[in-house]
Length: 299
Image 1 (cartoon, rainbow, N blue to C red):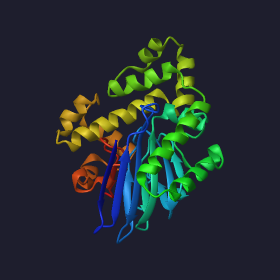
Image 2 (image 1 turned 30 degrees about the vertical axis):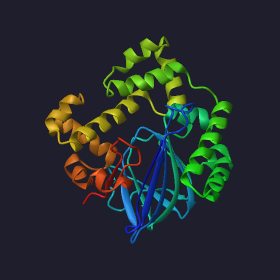
Image 3 (image 1 turned 90 degrees about the horizontal axis):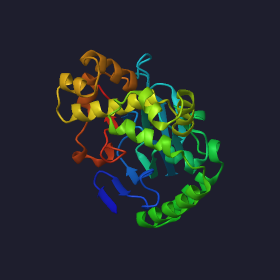
Image 4 (image 1 turned 45 degrees about the vertical axis):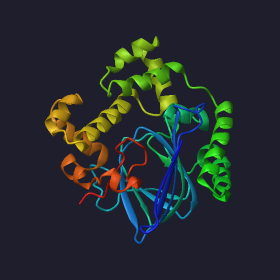
């Protein structure tokens, strides 16, 4: 299933597709984009609970770290500048900047699927945004070049399916128990007790923690924090009060929720939420369909 929207007057086009059923649900989404905007663009990207592979065709994307302690006013710490990159699971927000021109594709992955496709232990590069060549050599660069040469988004989506299926067949399999624990954290909204989760896998605590970090990248507790943050942002964006949201997301109180969101995004909800433009007004704003992932730079 493909979805294509564009606004030639404003200078952007966006294409989305569901991956081949044999790759789902681990390979979540394909997204193609071409931007030719009148001015540079800066977006605050909050931790999204996914691994993102960016396949750039031209121009460069600058990514900066955002810290609640250091503050994002100066743009944060430079992390990566280039056309293609891969972002691991993160518990900190980033600023994405470009000069107005950008052309490429993104592949959104559950971290356990990234473990299989890339064949690299996820904890070795957790919290990082890296050049894919650091992890897997030139194969991502060659894929980006091949995609750029194709004439349509549909042809590019087909090539992604073919290449990712071959990578999937060659890669290490993630443990079904790790996949189950990952899904249970999401099903519970991050509220399931981690010790109980470990017990239900049948592993001891040390083995569970070690396997989870190897194949997901972060600890189960860190993943639960991301899941709770996303649920809170979704409810707040839908108009729920801060008090109701804090209770629904199992924070001890409203102040606890505000502190946690600031630690992970760089901003308290009172500054973050006014910077969220309705997705219907500009579908470029959300990198992952159905999730709260991006904001205008808060003022």
